[in-house]
Image (cartoon, rainbow, N blue to C red; front, side, top):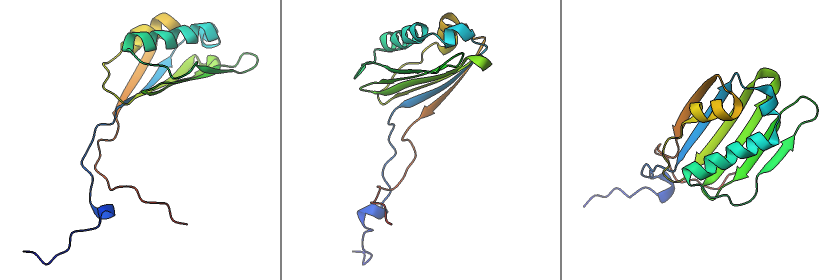
Length: 141
């Protein structure tokens, strides 16, 4: 029997867990008029939700910036969230989807070309929670 004491729980590493996937999507070369269109973005959100079988927890929230500026949208999902920020002056849309349950890949390039006229789409997929770490402890001041 070892005389070494077991480390306290706060010092033991937790097992690695997959806690979802986050897609960080950059859409370039978009049609500026669609990036200023709340109905176009609402239709895009509805298509993502429908085709991936997601579950909205509330209605989307939209902030339409004045003049020729863009739109910020956020949809709270039971699985996490879907967000977008558009920059019509640059033909750019930034989209973020985090899903804490397994979800299949979505054809981002094809769908964003259809919905926003995107000429180029860059998708980064991040597996969340897979690193090993220690249990969190209360913050100290």
